[in-house]
Picture (spheres, rainbow, N blue to C red):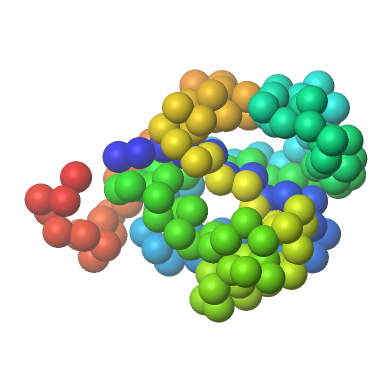
Amino acid sequence: MQKTLVLLKPDCVERRLIGEIIRRFENKGLNIIAMKMLRVTPELSKKHYAEHVTKPFYPNLEAFITSSPIVALALEGLEAIRVIRDMLGATNGLKAAPGTIRGDFSSSRQMNLVHASDSEESAVRELALYFQPSELCSYTPTLVGSFRASDET
């Protein structure tokens, strides 16, 4: 099982798409093992987007991510990082395929609704920014047999 971070960004919250996006993850068979609503501070933004802080676009990115609450999710599942990134679609909503979250709901590169960790290393780092280990509640749903074969781990 792979754990990863997903952020439902300010545009997702403002547009009241939280439930729709969460529904898609749950329908895919991913487990929500932690969830919280919070406001990203400039300090947290700088830690989260550390690789972008010196880039010219960073001030706009920070202004956006701190503009309204977000919902942070820790998700768990088989190949969760790849599966979620495939579900999101291309970063730019205008280039994202129909049927993906961004393809269905976004028409922007920056206001693209959702952030998801892009690797296991990023997931570990990013999860630690938003959740304490004690906040992660892994479990096996009773319906797991309906999602995958018993030898798929």
